[in-house]
Length: 151
Image 1 (cartoon, rainbow, N blue to C red):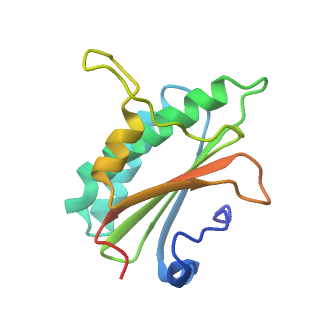
Image 2: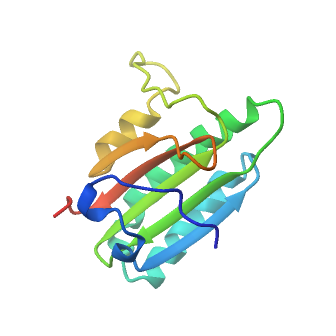
Image 3: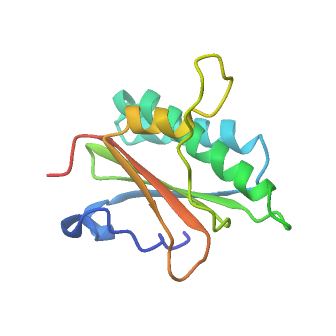
């Protein structure tokens, strides 16, 4: 498994050991990446006995992966997109990496706009979310937590 980009959403919860259940996917920056990732999330959360978090996690993964695919497709070369799923048996942490150095931007769309609400949806569904630039791999990581708030 590819190492998780250095992650410190909260100083007391920055250790990978805090998240014993882990999965990694590397996908081409293609539209098919999104349904593949959703299916992976659904099956994995069922196996981890966290199916009650599946619907929310699938929606968040759809939004984050869609944004990552679009960011990658806008680049000169087509780098992969990467997704990590981690769990501590009651929460799910989703991390999505793309090679673009552009930070995510929350759009303010009109009521009749067909897109542009992805990060608003992520913010609404997840317990918390944010993004960061990993210092050793370039690009950016957008992350979201599904489940209970940090202790």
